[in-house]
Length: 332
Image (cartoon, rainbow, N blue to C red; front, side, top):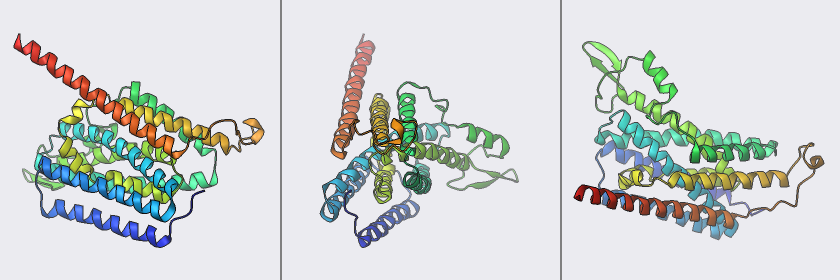
């Protein structure tokens, strides 16, 4: 067991993070614009630096294990958040969201994600504290998710879930956006704007990603404080990352394999941990299974960084080769 962080540090962290998020929100509301590549890169660098400073403070206050758990959790959530951006791109294209409104849509999406993840963290922490067998469930779920991520077909690739299609049939939706308004008047009739459908689509997406990401990070740490702060840091700067990456997202065609490997690795780690704390009578007579290995935080951190690096490099190499082939074909 690593030492507990001082209560003042935890409270201070939450206050600072809430203030940063509020500042980011006010920036979108007061200064709506399409951020440049340079502006987006500077903001992403700022949030990444903030996360690393936070890890350094954890190292000072609670030691290397605590800091390592945060870094591994943050990188896991960050990689899953990048995967989330792929879906955001599809949703934006599907609903033809004007570029000047995309900042507001992304900010609302991030707030919704924080709310849902907060709920899942509270529920997950309570389950883990009272029922040790939940690690088996989380592990099995992550292994299934990893397989689906790598080899499954997404039924909602068009950007609309069954829920948004269901709601569209039962709501009067205007054909065009009216700025960032949720309600508008068309030919004397009050109607919902497409912005409502965008928010519904992003909300459903956020729920699905929360279901995937929370078991993943609980496989790295059981500290609700680390789980929640890692999620906040992963979501901060996501809006700017969306504009910074731009078309690069489409080039990362093998990224989902890297994410699938990370989820599968954490799933196996959770099953091993479940065996170590086993209380189920039909497994080893209800005794702990001590011969399975316990995977430490630093191994997890290495696997996460290595998986994302390999998937990104392979994707960029494949994309460059594809571009060269297209140039050769067009030049013939």
